[in-house]
Image: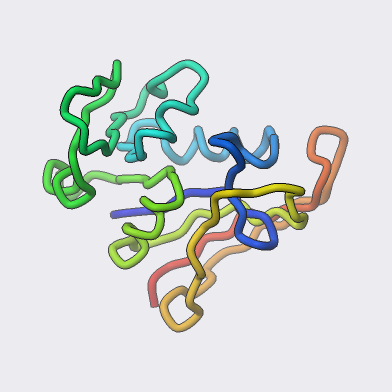
Length: 162
């Protein structure tokens, strides 16, 4: 199963200067709950954005065409196809970013696990691909209202390939 996981704003913004657009503790908890014990696949810049490097209790895989680069605690592959070829058929793989990897993975993914934030970030330089309603069907939506730790309304939304 190949899943894509991301937090997106109303314009599908996902980041600015290699940082998340929003800090939503419940989104981070959901990310951890869904990905722990599974494979997470990311681009080099996403790996570099992780504050403590490789995420614990997950098989970290980084895509980089530069064979000289090393990613402590993670495997490196030159392409998405190469990385996926090293995964077993019963392995749950989560694509965790960035924008170009999301675009590459969309035609291959089985599901999208999105946090849709009801706001527009003031600045965004990385965006999630368009979600084609002819390809993706919303299977679950769990809305959450803003509160003292979450400055915006948001929803956890799962889409599956139709």
